[in-house]
Each structure stands twice: as C-alpha cells, then as structure tokens.
Amino acid sequence: LLKCALCFFDLLCLECGFLLQYEYFNAVLINERDEEGNYLELGKEFILVPNDHFNNLPVNISLSDVQVPTNMYNKDPAIVNGVYWSESLNKVFVDNFDRDPSLIWQYFGSAKGFFRQYPGIKWEPDENGVIAFDCRNRKWYIQAATSPKDVVILVDVSGSMKGLRLTIAKQTVSSILDTLGDDDFFNIIAYNEELHYVEPCLNGTLVQADRANKEHFREHLDKLFAKGIGMLDIALNEAFNMLNEFNHTGQGSICSQAIMLITDGAVDTYDTIFAKYNWPDRKVRIFTYLIGREAAFADNLKWMACANKGFFTQISTLADVQENVMEYLHVLSRPKVIDQEHDVVWTEAYIDSTLADDQGLVLMTTVAMPVFSKQNETRSKGILLGVVGTDVPVKELLKTIPKYKLGIHGYAFAITNNGYILTHPELRPLVRMLFTDPFYLAVCVAFVFFS
Image (cartoon, rainbow, N blue to C red):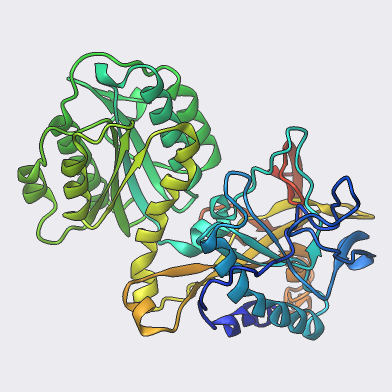
C-alpha cells in the first residue's frame, strides 16, 4: 500500500511556461452553469458517478480536480502553471488505484496553495460561500514539508501598535500557530519596555504545539493591549537565551530553531545581539513580519532576516496575513530540498466521516512525503514543489498484522512518536468536535480505553 501511495514520485516533470489559455477542472466550479445555461469558466462538465468504494459519493475515478483556497485567485499565473504541470499526476493516480484498489483519496498539495485530489469530487462552499481549506495548513503537509522546529514568537505591543495593527499582529500569531504541528515546540512573548509571556505559567520554556496548547495561547492573545515603548533588544536576548537553554536540556525538536518577530518597525539592526548569540553558525533563523503600510523601518527588519537565514514580509491588511505567514515554510523546507531528504511521515489517527460505513465512522491516518524538483537550478535554490499524500484506513493496517504470531493472549498496538494511539484492540474514539471542512469532514478524536 505504501509503495503504491508513494509512486507519486514519478510526477517529477517540471514547470513549463505559463499557458494563458489553459483551463482546468476547479473542484468548486465543475458542472456549474450561468443564467444562460453555459458552463462557468473553469467549471466545465465533469462526470461524477456514485462509487461504493468511496461510500457512494459521486466521484470521477478517471480524473483528479483542483481546489484553490477562497483567498487566492484561481487564475493566478503561478496557480495555473502549477496546475498545468501537475496534470501528469492523473495517470499516476489512476495507475496507483488500478494496482491497489484498497487505496482511497490520493492528493498533491502545492506550495503555491492549490490542492489536486483524486478521485475528482465536487466541493461545496459553506453558507457564506467560503472554502477555508488550505492544504498548506494541514498536519500532513506541514510535517512532510519541514523539519521539527522550536519557535519563539515575539509580538510588539508598544503604543504604536494600537488599533488595527495589533489586530493584524494577533491574527498573524494565530496563523503561525496554524502552521505548527505536534513535532514542534513554541512560546509567545509580548514586549514593550517589559516582557510579557502570553502564558505566565510557561515563563522561560517551550511547549509542544498540540491542539490544546495552541488553543490555550489563542485565548490569551485577546488579553494583549498596546502601550509604552518597544524594547526589542530585551525581547531578542530573552528569545535566544530560552532557545539555547531549551536545546541544551535535550527537549524539544532537537532540530530547527526560529524566532518570529511581529512588529511595526525596528530602530536598529541589533547586530551585536546576533553576533553574541547566533553568528557565525546562524542556527536560529529570524523571520520578520512588518505590520502596517509604512516602510520606514523595513530596511532594518529586512537586514535582520537576511543576516540570519530567514525571511522578511510586510503585512498591511488582515487579508494579507495567511499567505504572508506561509512564506516561512518555504524557507524551512530548503535544507530538506537541497539534501533531497524524502522523509515519509504518518499522522495520528483521525475520523473521516465522508467514508463512514455500516460499522460507523472510519479511523484514518495519512501518509505523506515532500516533492522536489530534479532540475539542478531549482534544487540548488531549495524550492519545494509541494507534498503528496494518501489516506489509509486504520483497518487496512490491521490486516497486515500476523495474528498467528501473537499467541492466545497477545495483541498488537501502534502509537506515533508523539504518543498518539494509532491502533489498539480497546481503542474507543469519542467525538468531541466536528470540523466542517468541505469534502474533508474530520473530527477531533479523544481515545479512551475500557478494561
């Protein structure tokens, strides 16, 4: 099963020139017509037939289709170009399914934001006409695209950050949290003339970026307010010390480290601090987010990011937040791409309610791996094309267990490296909360054992 799922590697044909007239099957627009009865642009006829292997959902087992997040233009040249060269995946998807009919959803999440899915299926927006799904925010994408990381987020709460700027800063922090997974560790520090840990009980340490911790920190973001003078040097010293001490304890990711700086400006480059803590090795990457339309202090923030192997971006409106935050993932994926590390990742078990069978909801796990370019120029720059993945029902994994070797009272179980239970004879999933992502109806699962 895994071998078939990872045959996506065969796709490594690469970017052709942008074709102005190229059209594709947009998963939201397929089979949609205008008032005159004509198919919408990107919404051509797309045959959908109920298939019992996919819980009688109407699908197209001959073609994949493409979902583009609502906040992105579906005819953006970068999107259309990526959709064009990734169309060769159709044959790979179909061949995989022919070789192994137990396969279900197969997909490619692009670093540009589009999501190619097989078999093709119609996506429906929510009641507000929005599809919030962005493949780059999913755990399988984040885990496969980047190495585990320790992250300290510094948020400027000086007086100049009042009003909309602070609102944008909070949303930026929240979006960064969305990109962190269970392999990552983080903390958030607000600063003016003093340091304010968003969660005072976690002063001086990092915590695992699991769902509970991230939600807890989000709740505390609302308590931040702007006043006083921003003393960035104090915040940087604290962040470097914390990362250094945490790394020496042997805890955390024991891998990449980063400082995310969210501010409306910096009056200095603070090169003496970087020389003390981070040079010449530059083990901690600095990512700077300039909040607001003014660019008076942009040069200092750009220098800080470039001098520390990071990335600079400017966020002027709330609409800019998500796409700008995503940029740091491309930077952190570069070492993997350059070294051609094709790491395979497995997510914890979750429930996919779209494939519920006679026995109820189906436990699922996702296997994924990064996709790189074979072109020397692209490889040398460390450009990640995206991540491929497939969903694997846990019951398929159970079939591979040699039960005759377990003995009369023996049983097999599996847990992830983060301690999440993948399968166990006494596993009982309790549905806590329903997330209505279009097509992907996944729920948060709690596991309880009964003796």
